[in-house]
Image (cartoon, rainbow, N blue to C red; front, side):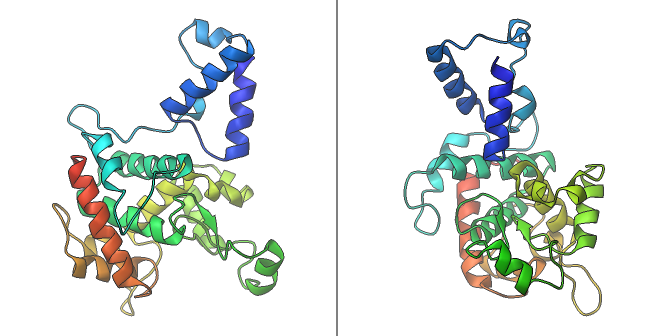
Length: 261
């Protein structure tokens, strides 16, 4: 009885479940008298296929040694000035998990978090291009590439880029068939990670791609100037200094949490 409930919640909210969320839903279903599924009797929880990956490292792996210190540290003047909302925390976890899976170093991870923070207006959830306007507006004003307008943490745009992301993530055509998959954190985060690392989004006039390795430190912390330069990966120099400041703040939070990359 529980698996369809978890599936319905997952479909409605557009992302998987953290361990704490699974416990909370289970507790509610217990109070409502909803019986467990056969999978639970065998030790497999019905929410397992919808779980969000962990940002904590495996033994010797990449990730946060102390997630609690990281989340405490992001409550900084340039970042989240009040308690994190569940969606903000889940979005941070999804990005951290994708960065950990890619074995990313400190500076790469800090700049990805800062980019998502800026592009999503601090919601840490994937957004549509001009998300404050209507779909009708997008159809009219983004006609040159509609319906392949920007979606996600880094505003994936144009059909060829959706096709590339689909192929790179091994989605077997699912993203091209359903562009709104890019609105799911567990899809959007890997798109951002691979795209920023490999330079999918922008190039200089000589054709050289703007990638993280071109702009920030491959190990250890980066400077504000390096983070300012990294904005070229996404959008020229638009808001470069503001995002650099946010990257420095995320870098400090990652250091507090013992990020190992």
